[in-house]
Length: 473
Image (cartoon, rainbow, N blue to C red):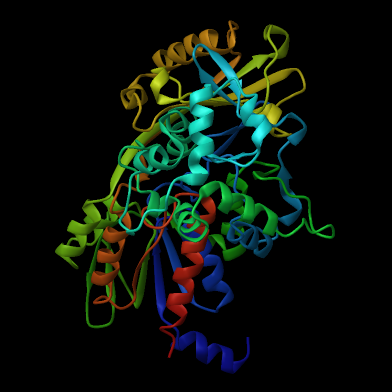
C-alpha cells in the first residue's frame, strides 16, 4: 500500500458491523475492497447466521436455506467476488417439478404457472389440481379491472380479487406464503411482490404482464456458466459464509462477542459488550434482527426502537431425514411437495434434497428435508426432537407412503427466525428510515427490512457499504 492509500485509509471511518450473517459478511467484503477499517462482532461462536451446513457421514445437511436465486444478481456478484464461481451448483432439472397436496393426493403444479400466474392454457386446462370453476375464474383474470388506488393490500385479498379463492388456497398460499412463513390474510403484497402491482397497473392483467415479461427475458448467455432457477454450492450454503470470512480475514471477525448496547458520543458510537468492555467507532452497521436491534439501540432513540418493534416474526423448524433407498417402496416425483393451509396438515412442505441436488448423499441413500411452523401449527417447533420426528414420519406415511425408518435425522429450530412483512410494512420501513436520518453513520440491514432471501440480504450489505463510503472525507 502506498502512502496515498495509507492516508486515505487512516481518514476513512472506523466501522463496526454487528451480526455475522450474510448481510454483515457482504458488507464486510465490500468494505475491504473499498479500503475501510472494520470489525465484525458476532455473539455466536461462528459467523454465517442461518447459513448452516453440517457434514454427517457422507451427507450434506442444510439447517437453513439450501439455495439462492441467480435472478437476484447480487448473490452471484458476491460469489464471484470471493472466488466461489467454480462451486456454483445447478439443480438437477431432469427431475424438476413441484407437487401440491390437495384432496388427499399429490397434484403436479401446472406447467407455465409462474409463482401463481398461469401463462399457458393447456397445462392449466388438463390439471387435476384446480376445479373447472377455479380454472375459469383464473382465466377471467384477463378481464378484471385494475385497481385505481395504490393502497397496500394483503396477499389474500389481491389473489382472490384477481385470480379467485381457489388459486389463493391451492397455489398462492402454499407457494408464496409458505416461502415467507406468513399468513396470506395479512401479508403485504406491496412489500413482497411489487412486481405484481406493477403488472396490474401497466398491463391491466397479471397474465398479460407475465407473458410480456417472459417474452422480454434475455436469452441464456451461452458463454456464461450454466444456471437453473435455483442454485446452490457444491459444499453447501455455509461455504458462502466460510469463503467470505476467509476473504475478509478471520482476524476481522470477532466471534463470541455479544454487543448489548450502542450509544452516541462526540466521536460517533460506543459499543458495549456482554463482558463489560467498550469500543468506539465512527459508523455502525447493525445486521441483527429488528427485535434485537431495538434492544441494542434503546439508549440511542426510543421512537426508532418503537418503530422496530412493529415488525413481527415467526418461528420455523426443518427436519432432515436420510433413508436407505431400498426401503422407499414408492417413486418420489419432482423436487418435493407443498401443502396448502386449507388441508390442515402438520407438514408445510418437503424437498427431496438428494434428488434436487448432487453431492448431497451417497448413491444408496435418499436425503429429504421437511418444514413445519411459520404461522401454521407454529407450536410444533417447540416439540422435542423425538416428538417432531414422530409427527413428520406420520405425515410422510400418509402423504407419500413412506413407511421406512430413517437412518439419520436432524432437527434445526429457528425461533423468531423469519420476519413477517404484514400489510403496511413499507410504511413502517419508511418511518424507520426517517428516524435514521438523525443518526449519521448508523445503518440497519438484513432480512428484517427489504427482502428475506439471500439475494435481498446480500444487496442490503452492498448498499450499506456504499452508504459508509459516502461518509469518507
